[in-house]
Amino acid sequence: MQVFGYTRHTLPFDGNPGVDAQRRTIADHVRERGLSATAWFEDGPESSKTPLANRPAGSRLCRQVQPGDHVLVAGAVLLCPSLRDLERTVVDWHQWEITLHWYYQRRDVWLDTGVTESGVNCGELFLQVFEAVRAMRSAAIREDVLHRRLQRNRNGSYPLWG
Image (tube, rainbow, N blue to C red):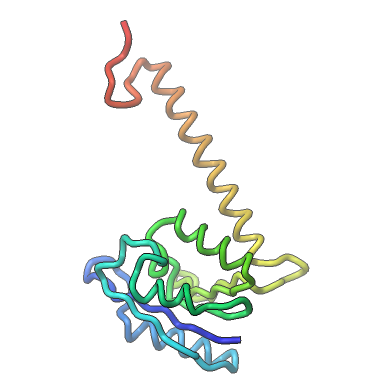
């Protein structure tokens, strides 16, 4: 089992911690668990809108990580630019039994996709939450479109008929 740390330089206005703070947070968590980091991967701020596998250090991480390994990041937003990319990464890594740990700053807790609590695997629970959020988002979009049609408002860039 190997433990990898991933950091990304942040832009001054995005409110995320700097690389040094990210490293300290990850190193503290690794030390608390009695592990040691095998390797560190670090991407620049220009990669903030790029999926993990297309970033220079992110692609090296994706090639090096193996089943049973652990990846730690100081925030999910630093790992993936969108919810869809985060979901894809979690699903792929969960299938390969790669455990993802990320720090949730607002609650001062670590979320872990490999922990089983009370017979529930947190990775599977995480994926169920994604599905619920996706279903709620789809329902809200359908409801908004119906509401706009009833008010005879446009739904896109095309004018109404009649």
